[in-house]
Amino acid sequence: MATDSNTAVGGAFSASRFIFKLDGLKLERFKGVSGVEIGVEVRTSTTCDEQGNWSIVKTAGAPKTPSVRVTRGMEKSPEVTQWIKDVYGANVSKKKTPASIIFMTDTGSEGEKLTVNLINAWVSSWSASDLSSDSTNGTVDETFVIECERIEFGQ
Image: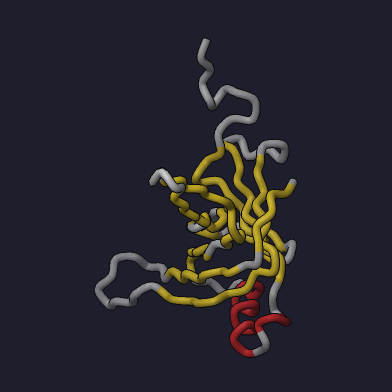
């Protein structure tokens, strides 16, 4: 008997329920996060034996780290803005900090989550949405790209 993934233990994670943490500080006013992925380089080697038979071997190479894009409504929240300013005003290696993305289920209970930790994260770019005097949208969004040294799954 097939089971509905939403009724299985834990349920499916919701694309609209997530929390972003910067250095342990919970920041919830974010519109979107994209680019969260892990992977490894794939190395391919080929050989040909004396009979002309080709052999292809694929092996795992170095881990790849993502560039995570975070979008939020531009606000006066000092934590993220100060982090961005610090990275651009100082030695980046001194401003690397832990960041986390917490995926939640529709119920949002503490037991139903997946945490992805961005180790030694720093901002590589920042941009604001286009401004227009005839815009009907009253808010300005900002997007920043976070680089990290590795990703770990946490509790």
